[in-house]
Image: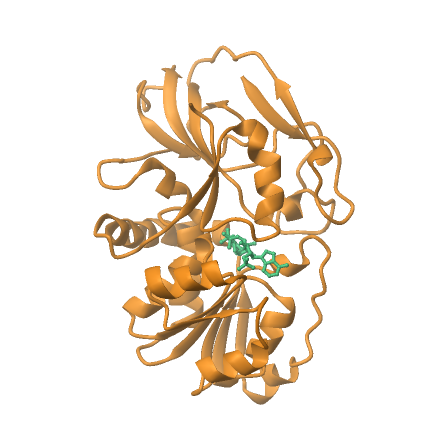
Length: 329
Ligand code: NDP
């Protein structure tokens, strides 16, 4: 089967040469193990940070090892009584068509009402990230104005829809007219600002005439700075991501003073450290998706060989919605 390893660490922007596609033999499984045929691989911005040898919440990706990644797939051989051939599972099998697991961190999935791929998106880690930031940190209440950056993406799209369900005013920031139209017309946000096309400060002021009560920050840099200028007293900020800086972009902030003068609470969080809340959050998200109340879109690369290009595209905003790689024909 095929897998992709990290060949070299990037200096600045990621290039295809940082990855290497390899063909490796299908392993035989030991007692207690299962063999998984992966159907979809999730591509996520955190992988960019892991490619660098820097201080982080987790160790860097090792060179010449399979790139880290979340996957959904199907059990094709089992020496573990908890898993039968044909079971659909989610795990961390990495950028690979197959994987072996002893069952730890492997979870069976019910695809009766929810498509398999959604467990990597709205009903998976990105959805959980949105749910946690909104309910636990922003604690957004009815009538409040909530702003979310990277609004059309896997995380941002869920943040805004959950905020609307709570009766908030949801304002998105996204790159390009197509993404902004999707955010307003399909996802139901009240407004979306195209940071590439217009004067961000002016448009944000118009869309948040009562100020900003809570921010879900995915990007950092200029758009975060513009939001800081408009926070209300006692605003809450869920600091989720700073994708504008992952490839070495400008992250300067000029409105940090507002954190003090508006008595803002800002909290960074890493969703994998809050596993206790996942059953509750995933249950709520699953019900909303099954009922059609939580919408999502996917950008799907056709095969593993296409993963590096799709990943580089994700870091440049080429994706619309959750970026996946299809691993079966
Ligand atoms: P998305 O699906 O939102 O895709 C990334 C998007 O980021 C792009 O489509 C692009 O949208 C935007 N983007 C990329 N580069 C830039 C840039 N230089 N400036 C502005 N925007 C940029 O990804 P996810 O939803 O998976 O992740 C969103 C954020 O959430 C990331 O920062 C990620 O690291 C973070 N995250 C954090 C977690 C945690 O536990 N803290 C867990 C999961 C995700 P556009 O075209 O609109 O600019």
